Length: 393
Ligand code: ATP
Ligand code: MG
Image 1 (cartoon, rainbow, N blue to C red):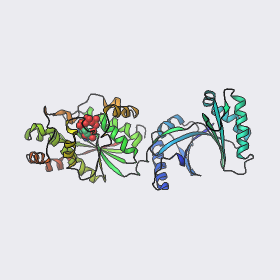
Image 2: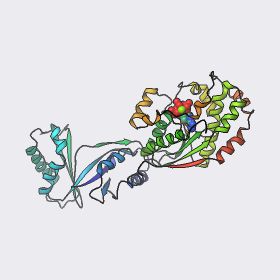
Image 3: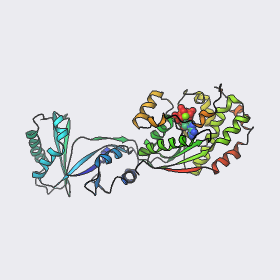
Image 4: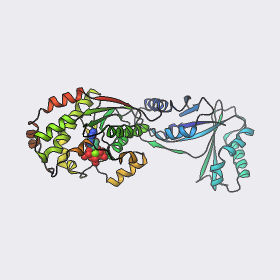
């Protein structure tokens, strides 16, 4: 039986944006994501996006899995394409939806007929097909107001399409419709979740990671690559820019007051990320910070890092508990990667007593003790770029 994926316009999570550019972007994102799974025909007609495998043995479960992570789709369905003949449609419906129908107790048939030459009108299709289903499933009765399953038959140009229950999509906006931002990504639990949340709003990501070899290992960097590969199943492909941060950290450690160390380092990260983001055409920065989580995330500490950014800093986790963040990281399957024990550069030189209410003036004064601008410039010259794809892209 030929099976396809149907995404209805009403099922696009569309709000306010220009509908056709939204749809074009969505189709482009779907195409790119499905390229490694098989060859497909894409059709946009009558407010529907149809995705049809060119090859009968394409694994549609894999397609559904991939599509359910693409932002911009509230829900979608798989459908069987059947010859436009009631004698074929009726047994095919029973066969195609047998698992769903045998578990339910109520249903209704919903018929749509865009091919007006079809032998029956919509109410007759409902009646005949409904009767046929009742004959085959003694567990079922018809409930037109609140059915457990709606069996939809659409008679279109080439085929009759049959579908049952909807599959929940990832929601959000198609990635790329919201501009581009740079996410500061560590190997922790939070920043992958922050990346996912901003991608969901249609933002295309560039990732910036600070590494401090030999204090941080190659394995720690690989962990970040793995995290981003998982995130990219939702966000689409991106570049990961690895910034060598060892010299900056060592200079801060050797020359600045220990209690300010973490904040000076975080401001150095922010300054560096800001310059890289501008070069990469990003209009905002993203971090995984949440108020009060650690000493460097008090309101005044956040104000100190904000002060060196020249673009908006988005912190989608700002008001969330760790439990809530963990729940999302489990859902998007980054959690198990995040908890692998590899050192992040932030944890390498942590002061015993970080200052909780630092002033920007004292930080600026301490920063004058090191040649920060030239250190940052040098680090940016040595940035390594790693392309990130969803595993099979
Ligand atoms: P996470 O789980 O994201 O590591 P965290 O609770 O460990 O968060 P911090 O280590 O204080 O928090 O880092 C706060 C934020 O700073 C991170 O969410 C991330 O956006 C950024 N960050 C921290 N370390 C790095 C790094 N090595 N490279 C890039 N960004 C980083
Ligand atoms: Mg961290």
